[in-house]
Image (cartoon, rainbow, N blue to C red; front, side, top):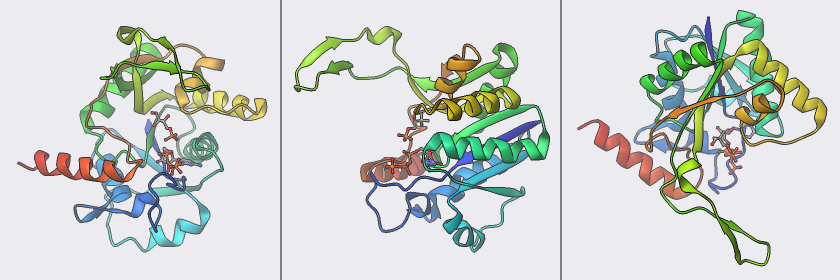
Length: 228
Ligand SMILES: Nc1ccn([C@@H]2O[C@H](COP(=O)(O)OP(=O)(O)OP(=O)(O)O)[C@@H](O)[C@H]2O)c(=O)n1
Ligand SMILES: C[C@](O)(CO)[C@H](O)COP(=O)(O)O
């Protein structure tokens, strides 16, 4: 079985909007509704868990959208990794084992082919995550503001979601991480720390995370272009 954990438990502070960014209107449809619809349309996805702060559950339930699959809701945590752990536990109660596709609710432009490739590569290599080569030169900047180092761009990869794992293993990694008290910024970091290697494959420059206001304009432009 393949289950998706869509994390939408953040505050969207960098967006600076009046409402959490997952409810912002993206060409007539809220960001989160777009992400969920994308996963509902993927035939190979058996279960969907949506992680939301408890005080947003009612808002979500009043969403005027009919999703084609059941959306199971789990409670969000303080950090992204706490929300992921909560979603994985909820997914475990639905399917016990199999594959977990972890995806940011704030990446509404994900495509079926990216997720499908992630699932296939997870089956082949044990774990996978998509991403893209950085387009800019990446420097290490010291606290004094001066450049310390230029990294070799050919070996760098800017990681996105979906990130795909065996459910039992990624849940075990997140539970151990929680015990350790360490904070990570994505799920590959949890997996690599306790379980093993993650195969990285090419996602899309269009699979952006809606983080700051200008991302909304970029996402709108991508949606308009896709419809042509
Ligand atoms: N405690 C958290 C923090 C983040 N996320 C989710 O993880 C994804 C990536 O996080 P980010 O873009 O940083 O979202 P926010 O934390 O909401 O944004 P910000 O850091 O600007 O507050 C988002 O879908 C977000 O909702 C989550 O489920 N629980
Ligand atoms: C998981 C992630 O989207 C991969 O790029 C990213 O690390 C999330 O970071 P954020 O600071 O929670 O947005």
